[in-house]
Image: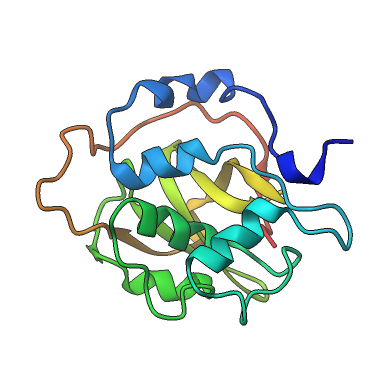
Length: 185
């Protein structure tokens, strides 16, 4: 059992996503990758790292336990650290549907919002296959990881406002491997 102060898997990116470690941007993607493997605290215990994100964002009064869905919190800390303004009501996943500008075709580093039974989910685009987006996000299987989410669940894709869009923002086609997520809560 890992120490609560270090609830982070010390694993590299999965082999099929190792290429991400060589990407020069976008900044939000790089910030998200730096948090890869962060785990939710077990049971009633909280991961101090996740709770520190709430404090850094001045959300400690609203966000009090890491068993509360934290995909929006994760996106807010990534946006803030990348120099982007988080959306109002950033803890609500579907609030991220108003971030940046509309992205008619999702590309690397875009913010994707999804609908699911009981709410929504927000994560970053790292690629896609025929039927799913491959998304880097928080609160996916209680950790920061990459998961596949059905394209049919996409609510909205948004691109950060860039002063100069990074050259590597592009559509990324990947193999259809891995389980398809049906509920990220």
